[in-house]
Image 1 (cartoon, rainbow, N blue to C red):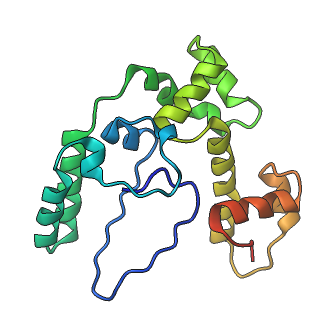
Image 2 (cartoon, rainbow, N blue to C red; image 1 turned 30 degrees about the vertical axis):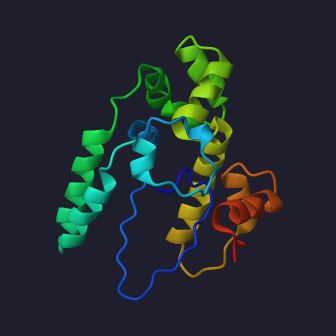
Length: 190
């Protein structure tokens, strides 16, 4: 198990290797491991059996290795995750219910969540770190970065109007957008 990943992961697989990537969204990783996310270092590798204090993933690996169809493997992974994931913590409900605040540029999301659920700004920030493994500011940055990236992927082969992308998606200037490309994709927009 790797977590929380906040940047691009580069890896190589030997010939004939098999890989299934499970990407936990929101507080899914926290619910499975029940360890506050801010205690993990980004990119560190953890033995899930040690993390959960159960020998369940070795058993899961054996079951998956004997299966040949991807659909069956994915269903088995889903069943395992559901069996070991804790129910949603009541303190996470305000975060999960308020994701719309993070899509509004005009509202500072943490203040919006705090106000909507009568919480302090600091308690919302701490819940983000514990449940999600990153700050609300990092979430806003990531959601903003996805927009120009999606736009670029949908464009034809016509030249890219970088200034238009910068303005449309709320970046201060070209270097601001370039920094996000470096941060999330370890490369330049080219």
